[in-house]
Length: 464
Image (cartoon, rainbow, N blue to C red):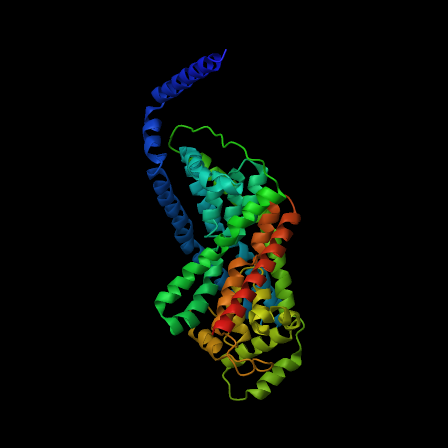
């Protein structure tokens, strides 16, 4: 009786070998390519190269149309704004609120289109199934599967199209866990924050070598926390049961352009119609908080105290004064004690609050609060100089630099971990079927960012 199972096993083995041999006969070319692409050692290396090219394409190819869209938004604002000089509130609403709000989500369209173009090509060619197979062993220990890799990798370009790409994950719990950790990836919107801080403080103090090290380190911070977060989610919260990763390896074929373009268009249209409305609403709310109340005496006081200043300087100082007395400025001062352990003053705090529609907005907000002007960019020499010269005016730190090494590192770590992006929160709510997980992500990541930023600031202060 003991030999019977062996007979059954031998019979099964022959059947499987027959199936494989028959399949190889029908798709010899696919099998030959798979021997290379699914090789134990060469397969992951080739896959990494393909994914790096994929990621680079999303980032670099989208850069130019994104700049064109932003230029179009700026051009429209420049045309509309002068026509409404006699109506300041309407001018600000249309230029900064409505036009700026529309541009806030339209600027992401090139990344979304390019991402889904390449995903469609990889899927229709048959390689996406192989990619999932290669990465499954790497992700299975924390409850995810191989299909989680593409959303996580593309998250370094932008979290919004990355969240949309989680639709390729069939398991709803694995998809939810992947979507939850995607915002940890250090997207391109965080880059201007890193660039400004590194160029203004790290580079001048420690040289370009350390500046590069810090830039790379900031891009790894989120990934360092994403993996254990996924492990806790899948093992303790969602309690995903380990399942065998079973998939059919399709034959390689040329993608059909019509199908790829149609799916790409559908995903882009869905993003604009659903997430875009929420993003626009958030932008208008932030604009209103930053604009009101508008006390006329502020302008008189600024002009009286700066009688010899040029019109450009007066405009910059007036913008800074208006932001300080706005509801956003008042709220920033009220909650500044919460951010004090990270070394943030009220101006940095206002920048953190105002950057909710998009993380990179903190750069232009700092330009306004430091009287440089609302058009400040990460490479603005005037903004860097103003930040380098900024001192605490009161309290136990009076007379010391606001942007100390500890505060600079804490600010970068905070932005590397916080979910400080309204479009991402809106898209996460859309992809998870409600605001429960989106709100949970915002609270969890913001609390984690505060704790990590505080730890960095306190440690660096004590070591320096």
